[in-house]
Amino acid sequence: MREGAGRALGNYRSRSASDGARARDWRVGRAWLRRCARRAAAGTAAMVLAALGVVAFGPAPAAAVCAAPPQQQPLPTVSGQPWAQQRWGLDRLAALGADGSGVIVAVIDSGVDARHPQLRGRVMPGWDALERGGNGLEDCVGHGTEVASLIAAQPISGTSFRGLAPGVKILPIRASEHTDSNDRGRGNSADLAQAINEAVLRHANVINLSLALSEDRQDVRTAIANALSRNVVVVAAVGNAHNQNGDKDPTPYPAAYKGVIGVGAIDENGVRYAKSQTGDYVSLVAPGQQIQAALPGDGYQMFEGTSMAAPFVSATAALVIQKFGPNISARQVAVRLMATADPAPGQPGSPEYGQGVLNPYRAVTGLLADGTSPAKLPPLPQLRRDPAAEAAAAAVGRRRTVALSLAGGVGALTVLVVLVAVVVPRGRKRGWRPGTAE
Image (cartoon, rainbow, N blue to C red; front, top):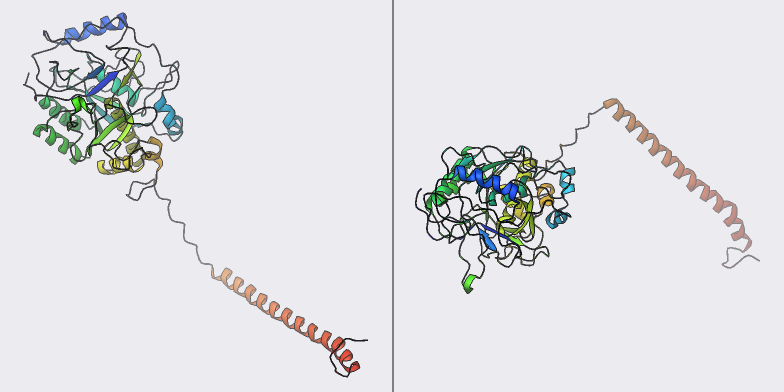
């Protein structure tokens, strides 16, 4: 395994304070552990799961094994419609046929477990930087599955949870098993750079990066530039290290690279999530607190952080590409997402909220002057000339003019007759003196 990139920030997953560790039932957990253990080489590093979980890139040992699942059980379903879905009214998007069909979204993360009932049939074989011959369908950490579910989870009976773009195909790219910036899980910047390149080679239209580096790495920078040059939309979380130790927020990469859509997080009240980092790399914000998402195997749990906000933006990018066609440029997609964002507490372009709060419906239906507006209506057909009809209309017009002239002459003559018949005799009677008749 190659050496890592040094100190890292993280790819920012956390869950509610009451569940400080990953939750899944023993039946699913044991099968998940056995499967991952067979795939992983021998190693001694234990994964750290704390109130704030992250997937980061840093020094890597030869291998890592899946941690044993805790006893706390996952939520069997999601009761009540999640607040993000309520905010956006996903039924309106469904009525438009906007579901991301025909679009491929690469989730570069810890892999994606396609066994979840709401992900079955939505996950393609992908690529694995950590296991030779792997296809990205292994997720010992669970973070990639959570992210993928927010994008592509299928509507099913019995739960109100669903993905924002359930028609997309998920391309799983496994490039990290870090769960904390201080642990020694697998994955480094070279793995990340190669993962980005592999996503492009596999025809991804959108790349979701719910992760970050604390350093500007040339290999990652080059990979991002390559993706953008191939017209791939790149979305990245901005991180959850706001005001850590009272210091200035560290710059997150790839979110800070030019052309990348950097995503911050808000809570249900539309206020910035307290840990969401701030800076000129924030393009816009999306829901990132108290977010329901799917767990590997089955079940759901509550999460928070900018890594939960990024997939909403990636899903919306997929909706825009479906709507306007594959020829829309990555830049046009980014402009549209930001131009149609809802107002936020900060001014447009603020370091806290970027251009505002993501609005998927407006992103798909909004009218812009950048060439990405809904298709213009065709011009009205030109009227064909009919000389005979034009001559007939002209004749009618002439007859109407003559009739009006005659009517006017008759009216004037009538007035004159009245004057002669009434006024003249009375004037003679008074001797043409002013006054009233006796």
